[in-house]
Image (cartoon, rainbow, N blue to C red; front, top):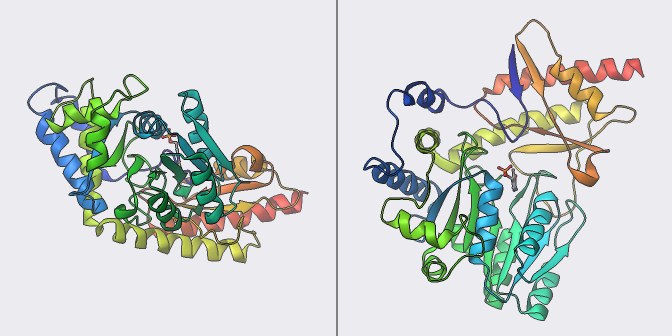
Amino acid sequence: MKNVSLTPAVFHLSDAVNAIAKTYGDNPVVPRGPKLKPLLGRVQRKIGAALGSGDSHFPVMLTSSGSGALAAAVASAVPESGLLVVSNGAYGERQARYAKQLGIKTVHYALPYGVRPDVAEVERLAREHGVGAIGMVHGATSTCSMNPIKEVAKVARDVGAIFLIDAIASVFVDPIDMNDIDVLVASTNKALHANPDLAFVAVRNELMEEIAGRQGRAPYLDLGEAYLKQRAGSHPYTINCRALMEVEAALDQLESEGGVAGRHAIYKSRTDLLRAGYDRLGLKRFEHEGMPLQSIGTALMLPDGITYDQLATALADWDNGDGECYEIYSAQGKLSGSVFRIFNMGHYELATYERFLHALGETLARLREAK
Ligand SMILES: *Cc1c(COP(=O)(O)O)cnc(C)c1O
């Protein structure tokens, strides 16, 4: 049985990425040996090429999941004057929590989940508190919506603050103009379609030099320390070289699909198909004004009288003789009783989503009948 993952965390990957683990054991790369430098350099160059930031930003690679990169970015890049976090979902709240835990002066503009931030209020708060950085999530995974980064980037420029975005869920699939961004937090397992072993923070070159000149607030997750070593082709700690090779394979795969624009088109064909299907099945989307939908998935309202557990269990147990079952995703925090999420990430053919829509339709009909 193939467990099709309709989640944003772990899903099927391309054969090229999967092939690495099958041969790596016979030919490992020593993290401090001479083979690290060219490998690390290629990965960083290919990230720069994919994001169009090769000349402007340095991607510091870290062995961690995305949240480790978020902690490193906040701990290393935010100046003494503090951070304004604009939050409207679980990961913005996490960003504010990390900043506070690091002892950083934190101003938290906390909105209900999925509600568009008021740009004038962002500017007012930034000026009132004199913060040196503004942080926000780009693709908001908890609500499957997109935050207005262009508008908030302009505020950051106007008030002279660093603009830090958590693009863990959006980078490589929803286009980002890196000219707007000073610090971009990313991981390799979501839209890049590699395994969840590595993450990176791309920092604007001038800011990177500044960061390298001072000590970060968190040992180990110190971007300046890592940058100084990586610039010379090494890393201060053990880095996962198998994962680096998988990331390189994933970047080559992305390139073969036409880069970010090509992958965005693939995801759009998926969301077009799926959202039309949800409409046909009478499922209502979780949506707020002024917040476009994200490409990686869709948040939907649970139909009356059907619980998330019933729906998720029925789809996970789906057996129609075609060899597939489906794993969907609950909503986070305050939304978990009323909303659920279906993601469309990973290396799947469009026909997979057609079969899933069929399974979803049958499952909903059965659950409605059983009520
Ligand atoms: C998934 C996600 C994270 C957390 O990443 P982990 O790899 O689970 O640590 C943070 N921010 C956003 C926007 C995400 O989608």
